[in-house]
Length: 623
Image (cartoon, rainbow, N blue to C red; front, side):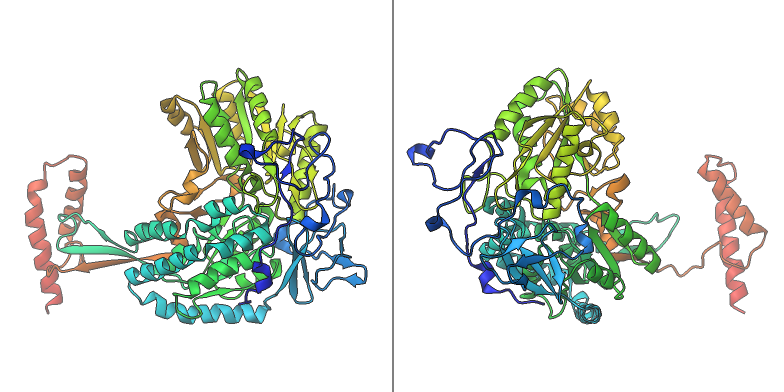
């Protein structure tokens, strides 16, 4: 594991909030407005620079806006090399005012290390050593040895250890808030609710789910199975390899890391190369209470993920893009490794004419823009009934123009930057495609500032052929499609290549339940969205290109465990259908078959035949 450098945890502000649209300056509750950069012009002009005396930390890496626009996005999980250049040549990861970023994306896997930049200001972050293939195999073996000890401990003791670790995480939550801010650009408040607040609830929820599943008694029919009892044990598979995404580097692991450990497995975690230290922090917190070596972390890009698959792991959990997920799924099938693969979504919200518009606007805004829209369960599409479409579009546009984009150091900020430059490029490409095909930009529609900021964007009059409708945008963009009612919306949702989640917004919840049954997706919320992702009891799954992996609930446990059935027979008598066979054997079976379809005319023969069979078997084997 790579130790955490203290300089990364040092608190540093990149920039105060950036207003997505120019607005009159006003103080909050009578206070003077905060000094700092703001926009001038029409919701997307250049930033006014912050005075030099107000800046903290090293000078940010400045990016010429056209330098990275319009390039096709790269697949982050493949770890393609990118470069940071200085006036003296290629950077070794040091920070300096002379640095400038080239046109290629910022994350570099080079010279045995991951070189990253902060999404807030593009300043370099400390390099992280890459794990070699030999080290990956050694990590798997260390985890396997520790898992033998861990799996022998009672379930209650494993739960208690994980609860202690979760409490430590809560006590030290300021550390992860700073880490995910610097690595992922998250707002403090967003990170608090999504990354830092949930470990103890997650452990408690998984304790409830696993306690009723790890050993389950089976009730047997005493007539068909006399004097027999049975149970099902879930046996840990051994070592689970987890290939994690960058959008939720801590909380995104609660649905895999916690149940894998709680059911007695070891874990080897391969975090995203964009957020390695945040996921490393979670592993370090767990290590304080778990057997040494049980949780291992390997760092690198796609080649390290490939090495993990080839290292002898016993199961795999992957969350990421469709392109990489398909490769992982195929290789796991070839290797005979059970795999749970989730490959994103393009979640729609269906807004019906009778919705509570105030709550609907608030809910869709949050679920579309939290974490800058970088969530597989984010609302990316709205299918709105055309009878209320004009009102809905005007009101959501007004609301989004008033939202504030910037650094999470400032409590007044609502929307964070994107985490990676390839993601910013993809967002820009999707918006440009929509505009070219006739969409109307209601608000936003452009990048902001020095970092990877993008203005909250609402696009109206979107159509099925636009990228924002048919593909996953994964950014602060909302595509609005006007429909002729619920039936039209459901038809469009079911035609999508994705099928993770959807939501229905209406006051008629009984009707919403009926409509939900017609939606071909894995998760449906009524008057909310994506809430089930945080509930261990409820499956989080999808259909079509989203993949068929299952997170959460007992249904997901087969990824981490294999079932072992145990039957104990305390009956001293032989079974009547055992050898040697004779005419009475067939007659007995024939009468039993008749009895199941209510033909009981020969049922009186059963005691006679059973007695005959017992005598025949005992005499045969008692010679």
